[in-house]
Image 1 (cartoon, rainbow, N blue to C red):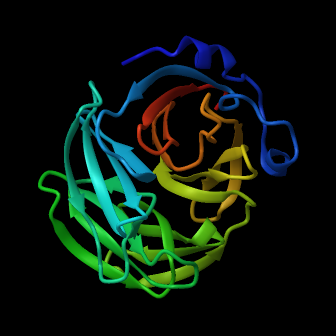
Image 2: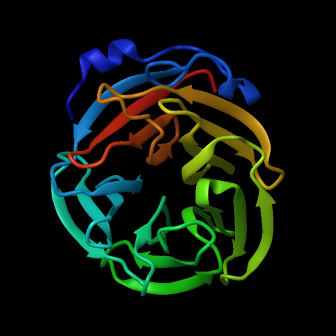
Amino acid sequence: MILDRVLAASAAILLLTGAATATRAQPDGVERARLVDVLPLNGELFHVQGMDLDARHIWVTSVDTREHRGYIHQFDRRSGKFERRLEIIDGVRYHPGGMAMHGGSIWVPVAEYRANSSAVLVEIDKKTLTIRRKISVADHIGCVAASGRGLVAGNWDSRLLYVFNRRGRQVRVIQNPSPTRYQDMKFEQGRLVGSGALGPKAGAIDWFAWPSMTLMDSRAAGATDRGVRYTEEGMALQGRDLYLVPEDGPSRMFRFKLTGR
């Protein structure tokens, strides 16, 4: 991995919680987090949408808006080298979104590229990148989080969160209590974590108690040296390690170490 000293020096060490995220000045990095390293992803990526990772691999979803094609790409975790990809299209649905891994499966929403449309939640085998099943949803779905109990899927800008049980049946719809427009979501230590946009170059990461959706923590985020919000697209968490892939190809994965939680 490559240490980006310039970006590391600019990472802010500030605290922000609750609604103040939308009103206080945004940091250069992620609040109360230290930038550890930056890993270039060496392979073709289009408009990045989401990401997740394990000990060996990084997976990134992207959409080729010109050719109307959606993909999930696999990279080597240590080197960032491209390994393989799977095209994921379902009729008029070619827009993959924020993704989540649980057990041996990767969940990816694939939607029409417009609000108030339709989507399928696609379960992909992590080892073979073959499709296991699809769950139809009568709305655009832009991101999904997965746990042992089921799925939580955010629609366009995540104004609504759809909850599905393990059998794929919709059991609940939640109004997003935050102004943050989540692009990627994960379950982390029993909490639902969403990452997304608040303004032209400002973003936030929010932690909610689940299933009450009580806001537990919120961190403001600024922009990379390319002027892209850190929370523009892909986000994953492993303990206190926060991973962000905000930029279209050529893309980079930023790893922050969270503090103060």
